Length: 251
Image (tube, rainbow, N blue to C red):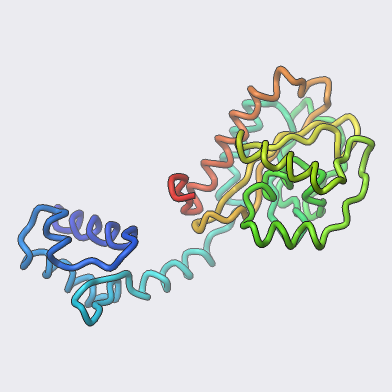
């Protein structure tokens, strides 16, 4: 078992290294002889997990890409998220949404309601703008700069309610706040009488593929409760992101 453990540790170290590594470097890192390090590296190379370069250094092999592709096809966001959404529902007693980013819109792929939930516009399969929703702003705040710029050039910002922010510069300032605190707030911007708190879900590459949000009447999601609820929303999104292979320290 110790041999298998060391083999996996070496593979993980090489995968996360910014450069290709030699047997000597691996030997030094793991406190072993160069000959032993070479044996581990040769085994990983034999099975396609590593590729040996002409300078005798090693880098991750395409077998890992192949496995990654197979795993990603099998992953179903809704199934992975469900237990975490249930937990969020129990902690907040507010309507919980799971959203997937589709182009410049967000699509509801799950909706859980509590006994205290009020009727809302949202329904599974429905798409909503990103700029007027908490989940949307949570996604926008963490998009790559080039894609975000393209979004502002493409989207037509229309008033959904009297509170909807439609000025691109004001939206950008709002997104700066979202980045700082890790969650977004919809202050009756998409539906009057409803406030929402959203946090982004990242995939294994650190890309915001979707979000989690809670929604409820403004009378219950007050300024006092927002910071309390936000802790649960962010934790839920982080737990789901982790299940998708996201490592926060790499963002």
